[in-house]
Image 1: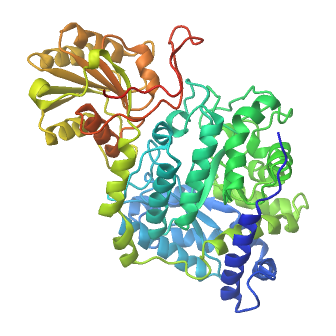
Image 2 (image 1 turned 180 degrees about the vertical axis):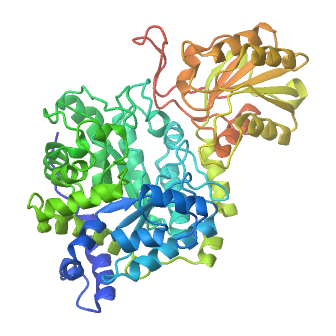
Image 3 (image 1 turned 45 degrees about the vertical axis):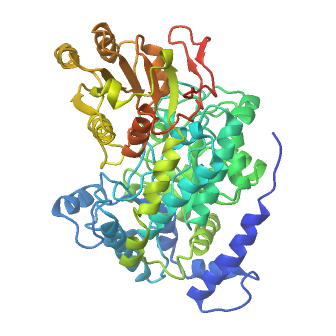
Length: 604
């Protein structure tokens, strides 16, 4: 583990841009780099204690509008937060950030999102101490996406890992970031820096670039640069590394058993790479790592991990944001009133999405008044947050425009780039006797069956329909039959009957387990004698549980851009170029690797 000072390139950038922005808000015009922090501190000095506490929180809020949400969203806000609207949230709690979710009805369409963002900023700038809000979301792409079509959906992390191109990873982030910035979202909780060394990981999986720390580190840095070019703060997550866990921290508190040396070798490199690239924010993990902190507090609440390792050892001085404080992993050991106070004492700057904002907000306020937290400690975090807001130009102009949305979001150029990038990620894992590519002349009649999980973005799919439609556009006669993630015996028989007279059956598989009836579906279809091709639409590990198919592709996600690319490869319109970024182990003998990292077939 080597020690590192803060990246000077980041500091230089901050000096130039933040000072100019702060000068604009304070009316000062001294040289940009001379005393930017002094100007930002003057803003902090004007804040009441309540305003200071508010700056530390990033909160969800229901509704498509900052001032006139639907009644159901008003009711949800009153129940969960005690305010009616996003504007009231900002006015009452002075929150420094707002996080958007599709389920909170924040992300209906690009123009609506932009108007919501503008409404939130208007409320923020009407406060006694006007400070713009940092609006964030989880737009990882692939299987975690909050803003869907008509915005451009680019391939997710493991797909980009399969592509292996730093240029493509950077371009994907730049496209994603440019479109987020156009709708007023300026902090993205991506890229994932976790190294997925555990195939059983229930929460990371294809959200990771892969299992090789050096490869992940390179792709993380590339995406950080892409987001920076777009004027969006990237966030690497989940520190100190969530890649080797069999527990989902949304529902429990995972323990990572890596030694400190293993952590330094496996988990640390992508975060070090992100820091070198000038990462603007780093998100904590609700995981226990006894080798890094023997108290067994979750990393989010661990001073040895966040201050000792992240700040002091790795030299990081940017914003640290918690993962959602509503997740079970951070609530297991302490009450909701203690969690935000302990997080701040550990070294956190932004407190994300507490289950009860009034409880968390008042707990921080009370901790300052009681002397458990000093006001100077709050000021330290607020300064980091304001530096970031200044760097992003939010003090100069917090608003976005309808014309800006039209000019940027879902453009033909972006969509074409997404298709090109996706095409280089599809991985051909198995191709018996050169069965692929298919042609309409020899295998024109296609049955598409399989899993139809809900769209990762809320706007694409279902996968069987997307695959069948894409095949139809290439000259095949394709029929879709959704058999689901857990097909019933009756549905399996229906698929077997539908296979009669077909030239090939394409099966979309999804997270196949030892007991999954998807295995029975494939076996019964293979038994018909009609050739079967499988497409792993999420985890490439599915191939270890399935036998008898003539060919298998991995698409790493079931968004349309990745499924359409897989069909172009299937039909020979594109060559398979993806290479496995994780090993696929034998399902019964995990020590035996069936397909190593780097495996990927080509067409001769």
